[in-house]
Length: 469
Image (cartoon, helix red, strand yellow):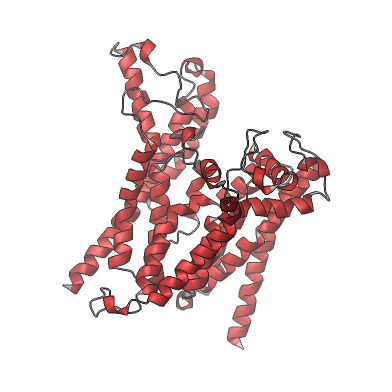
């Protein structure tokens, strides 16, 4: 009876959290939205009005379809509901079209798609060990996790103000992770394979899935010292995982393979001509690299060590999506970022193989893969940090004094960039300063978090190895 009552109360507070955040999302319907609102309206029009053979060729709008086929089919399905709201939004030539009905439809489509995210959070809560429960609701791990996920401020901004479908996609990721924790490996692999064909940014965490499933599912036993027992390899399990990947990929890419359009699809999915950084720098290693190059450039010009006529015209601080050359430091190619990303990921992958630690080790590796890719990837969007933040689980006190001071520093930084700087004479001469300061300040914090996570991981691996010896 007590357990039943506890479960009922748990259901009540979770339902209240989910309902509360849904009502908040409804209140955000009339707020500002970015160009991504037009991006998704255009994709609705493309998939509804044109045959599949033209989806990845259509270029009437600058916002061409550049997500994998499953997301295109998702837009196609939404378009058949959208036509009952406003048929004009489905006209490819109605660029920048927006009406009150279009706004309502697109906003509600995101809110309703978030139902998958709510379900995934509920499944993740089931994976938390119930032995560490507290009498206080606000101290219960399941309650804390639910609040951090359902009421994630970054996700609310990106999806329900800026406008995207990250909640729906994050729901697929979290549900896949939950299935791995529940030892339902085939379901976890199936969900992740589907997710990859919805949004290819999740390739960042594919190494964590691949190594974990190979090490902890395809090898069925370990030696007493924890190393893999090679004789326990299950060919049938590898075959079943491979079959899942093949069938999902065939369903997604098969029609375009039949149309001989795979090169065109991949050229849209991996547009390397967009440049190293997004228009607004993601706060990663390359933001620090760009800032160092810009600082050296300014110093070089002041000391007359550089020729102003030799400075590249395509500026990394112009706020445009374009290719550019660094002035003093070596310019960075897509291959260089790939190598840096692989090097950053390898230690976490090695630890996952040699010291699996079950699903917890998998989750830590997944977070580090996502964070390493954010740190060193090519043309990373700032919102990609959600890929690392949402699966992250913190069991120790959230912030120490130094981290608290750092976060509080964001307030004065914002005041300087938005209120004080526009009043100075530097506004015309150095218009890039607010962008540079914001990105660099945040990049320092994210680099610190990445380094601290890695130190924790590697220290744990070394301590475990020492104990075994």
